[in-house]
Image 1 (spheres, rainbow, N blue to C red):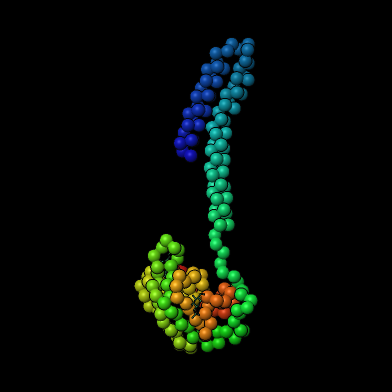
Image 2 (tube, helix red, strand yellow; image 1 turned 60 degrees about the vertical axis):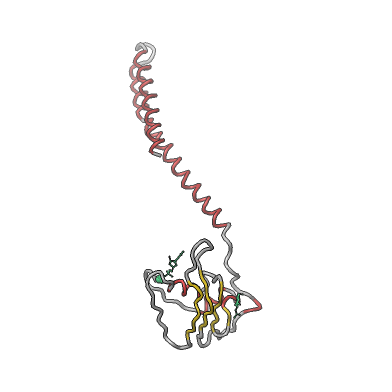
Length: 185
Ligand SMILES: Nc1ncnc2c1ncn2[C@@H]1O[C@H](COP(=O)(O)OP(=O)(O)O)[C@@H](O)[C@H]1O
Ligand SMILES: *[C@@H]1O[C@H](CO)[C@@H](O)[C@H](O)[C@H]1NC(C)=O
Ligand SMILES: [Mg+2]
């Protein structure tokens, strides 16, 4: 935009200079001095016009990026079905809260490294369990996997004898609760 601005500046200055020479080289009888003065005043405004052009192009570029982003979103694969009719947990699920993880492997995207590498553990019902680990060790990832915000690459999670990969995500997410940290869970 700076590049374009600079070029347009030079162009309008040259045009203006050319017009000035043109105006003063005519005798008074052809172009009245008043009209010539008015023309010069308008000519000075050419820069404003050029600023508008640059602004418009800049805006157009942003708008086209929005269209591009919408196109990207429409080609994203959908999440799993919200409800799977013939595999709905009964209303009391999860009644106790026994959580079993088995060989759980999780990664954020196919081209990213695996974050949880074969995690196997059990959270017994009714217990308060603390998960400790340094930043980036995968604590948040584990919680997100419980809600199936990320689908595991391998392994499974069983909560109260139901494999959470086999039920609808609405059924799953509406039965679990999370209290996130205000920042950086
Ligand atoms: N949205 C994400 N996209 C890609 N990688 C992520 C994303 N969130 C976390 N990671 C990666 O996953 C690993 C574990 O992160 P995280 O679960 O946030 O750790 P913790 O909560 O224990 O600090 C880190 O290496 C991090 O870079
Ligand atoms: C849970 O579901 C996943 C995905 O369908 C499957 O790969 C896994 O074997 C199932 N595990 C159990 C214990 O049913
Ligand atoms: Mg975290």
